[in-house]
Length: 282
Ligand SMILES: C=C(O[C@@H]1C=C(C(=O)O)C=C[C@H]1O)C(=O)O
Image (cartoon, rainbow, N blue to C red):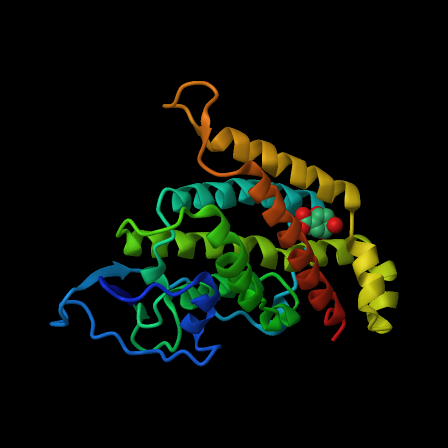
């Protein structure tokens, strides 16, 4: 599978609010990119190879994992490790300026796929998640919300204004950030499965009543959420220290931004959990 990325060196900068036009959601046109080695003047291009991670088809009835692997404790450990991935992805991206050309609608192209490189990669990552879950997991995907959160709220706050010409690198970092965020948030499916297996009767009543409010109450643990917020702020402080500068060390990213990001991530993770549980008995 081959991805092609291109950036026109002298295109107009879209404002952060225009980022959605990349996906055609605000009527922005998706101009097909001429491709690597294009004769278009001033066009830089970069080719990437990506292994397809499409999941091997699994019989539906064999997909719900009855083993001990889906435990709340083990999944929470996974979420903690993902904190590190998310913070390091943000730190990588923070070394570049905002680089608005990166978000030009003609920037991404891949043969046989209608959409951006980011959309494709996130979608492919999601396919890995369905193998041990109830089939309802297939239909839950809130990547649009994650996209908006990242491009509209987060990136303009932590990337320095302006351009440094690193359009391809910025795009790759954005892709990694989106993948890490998507993985974290869609892990809510595993969290929900673990919670259901732990207390099936409590959840069954709320599911049969198709009551999202009750489900949200059942699956929410405020103390866990506050601990997450505090831990990610501390991690962002430590991981983001620029040790090359004199004391006090400069910060590569504002730690409170990371805590703020998690205040947005957790409700999305819970939204995924509720959606999964509502379909868990189907
Ligand atoms: C993920 C969980 O579900 C909820 C969401 C949390 C999160 O996104 O970090 C934390 C606690 C719960 O309110 C969990 O219980 O671990």
